[in-house]
Image (cartoon, rainbow, N blue to C red; front, side):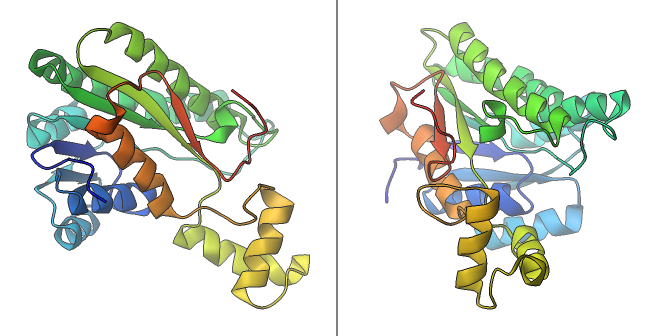
Length: 259
């Protein structure tokens, strides 16, 4: 596809692996000048070389100094994809107040830091895109990972607030909300626990049965990173000029809602 991204500069945070890497790869393939970001320099540079990135930004976004360094490397950016984040598999009993604070720092405040550094330039140039990578747990939380659920809800909320702030500027703010996505770590986990759940031996059986038990959806499988990247590329393009303050769910119908 050609979504008219040539000449646009895009910063994708947390793009040294997983969803961020897939997003960076597709934006670069669509002609954008992509800045690949990560904290591990060797891994980030390897991905940047593979995708043909315009620049490599190394920095910890949970600090002002790290955010400043990333913003300086990125320069004048037209598209900001706030993808960097983290989660763990703990529940209410084990998620201490410090865990909540750290999760918000990584998943919410880090994105705010980059918005505050990159959006003024977009506003001044009269065009820009801010895209948060959220998730279905923002609107349909589960008992586990309460701190992570809440941080996703904050990402969705701030994106809408930002859209209102950017009224009449030519800059839009939206959310892409993935469902359960099949990254390497997820595939290894599912394959490892398949015998205990009786999911079968072939990958096709394992994926179908794991999706049924863990993330029931209308497609009957886990999503692929490239499918999330496709939604980001669309929202980043001129074809999405009339979309702001929206959440695009890419979850196979996991979230059971008309809104």
